[in-house]
Length: 344
Image (cartoon, rainbow, N blue to C red; front, top):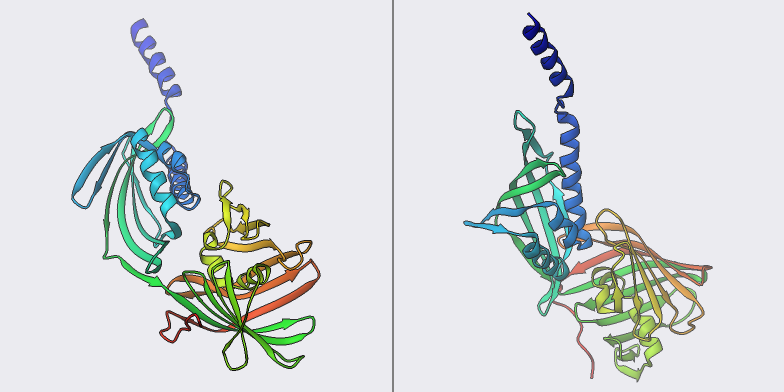
């Protein structure tokens, strides 16, 4: 009788110390890891990403099975992250998550669209791939780890953005005017403005940060322009500054993913602020190249969806914190064959 009572008591004590698997909490933990994996792609944090993977990590892709360590994964992923800009890394449907009976294993099935951009000689590469993959999670004493990933994908689509031709209706403290921008992926810009509040207009061509010439009313070359004027004109290259800040700014410090810092072609400081979801440029702060005591702030306000991702539709340029110039782009053409060339 004593032995039976003792066994009952022990069984009761053991049942009190068992940990009940909380599936809802575990599901949220895995979803949070999925969100973190998305974030590290946008902010190029290979160290954090590698730390989420089990060691060794098993991947199955394109008919190849790989076992890799964190020491191998981190530089491999960092090289990839540094070579592209992510436009999308987004689920197309709610992830499907299932658990083993004891809660030690889980699988997460996702449909995900990945879009990347990077500069090339052909233009700004823009590629999209729709994936379906299964991630196996294992619960350890340190929490969940991604033990393996098996991925499949549909046929990728891609194109190259070579040039942008845009017309904007603008307002300023002096009145209304129009701006036409014709710009390519190599830093060429043809710039034209016409004003309602004074006669005549202004037109110029710019090649990079050191070569520019004004054009007369007949489109003929009028005179060469100095570097401060070139910098001012390239400060209107709103689309390509948004897409490729590295084309215009030097010594970019991207260690803070939301707040980049660098210099313009005249060594004046530049700040670039990005949003915390898709990490797209939202604001650029730079110095007025014609009067460096003045701060110029470019605020990107509205965006349109295009075949090359979101592009600005409206923006404000604020000069010295007092004068606002509003641009509404009413006509934007991409990859037009009718594009100007440098005039000799």
